[in-house]
Length: 257
Image 1 (tube, helix red, strand yellow):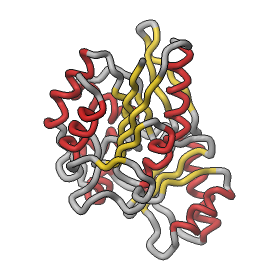
Image 2 (cartoon, one colour):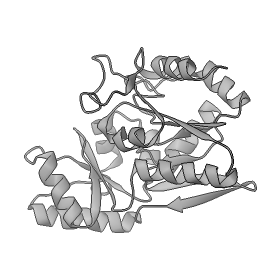
Image 3 (cartoon, one colour):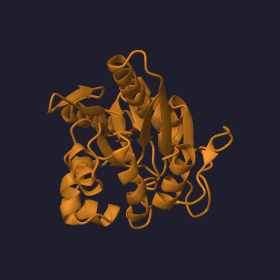
C-alpha cells in the first residue's frame, strides 16, 4: 500500500497567524523516513513553494497557483504538468473581466511591491516570491459584487476563479486543486499499477474543497473559531487543533509510524 498526503499550506501545515510549522517538523521527519510523500497543494507560486520545501525538508511533488501547475521529479530532473494558462493570458483575462463587470480590477500586476506588502502583511522579500506568477493572477476582490456574480462572469469568459475575502485568484478553465490531485494520484498509480494507493488531504478553506473531495481521507484543519462553515456538513474529519499542531495530530492518528 502507498500513502500520499496532499496538503494546503497557509492555515493548514503552516499556522494561520504566524506561518510557523515547528509543531509539524517531528512528524514530517518520520514521514520522510517512511517515504510517505507530503505534497503541497497551494495558491502560492513555484518560487514560494520551493523556498518552503527547503525549509521543511520536502522533496516530493508540489502543486502551485490553485492547481495550475504540477511540479514533480523524474531521473533527477524537475518536470512540469501545466493545467493552467500563462500569466499573460491570465492578465488579459482579468482585463476582460473588469470590462465585462464594469469594474476597475487591480491585480498583482497593477500594484507596487509596497502596496502588496501592505495588503498582505508579507515582507518585501516575500512579495518578490509571491509576485513571480506563472499561471494565474490574484486581484483585489470587489466589495460591491457577490461571489456568485464574479464566478458566473469568469466562467463565461472561459476561466475559473477562487474568490477570497481580500484577494481572488483568476486561473485557467482547466486548472484546479482537485484536478491536480487526481493527476498526481494517476501518476503514482501508473508507476506501480498493482499497488493500492491511499490518499489523505488536509485543508482549511473552501478553496480546498475539490482537493478534499478527491482524496480517501479528507481532514479539515480548523481555525481558532472552529472549522470553516464552507467545509462542514460533509462528514469530513476535523483535526483536534488549528495549524501545524492539528495537522500533525490528525495525520498521526491515521498513520501508524
